View 1 (cartoon, helix red, strand yellow):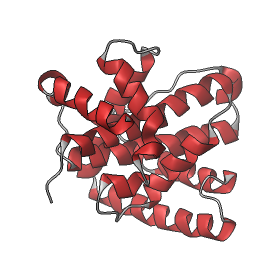
View 2: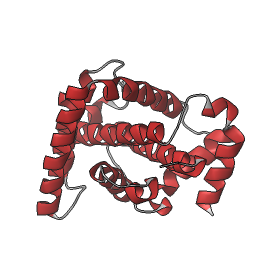
View 3: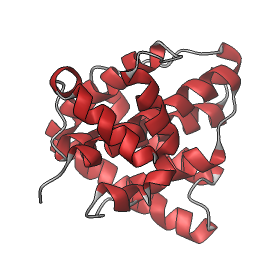
Length: 204
């Protein structure tokens, strides 16, 4: 299957908005439920055939597309976000080479998905706890580790930490998708104009 630059920017938007929620939760203890749900749903749609199907629709990654829009125009409001995204992209490279870890993550996602179905809510705190625990037991042990900074008051709360880890899992999932659709670091240098045009198309 061939993929387009539009597919790649959807995956990048998935990374960006998941990590924006990580930053928001770490600083304020609060998240946007709709964005968290879209991130978790993308984790559960492992076998979807297109990026559009993974995210449901471009509208579900509109916050991430707006972040990319600002980033490409040097209007980014959070300098820590691109660094966090780079760390996730580096982590994804290590993750996909660790086949035993990939298998363990896949099995854990299936269990969490059954739990979400039983509870009727993919963003239920118990589901986020399961996904956060899965990330802690698997991907977080790989190098480089993604370091999240924020308010120690919130980072000391189990529910906040679980939600952050669940969102990091979603960010890694989108990073895998970005690579599967042909994404490369060189894109940010040599395909910038095409990516800006693709973001603008998706936001129309």
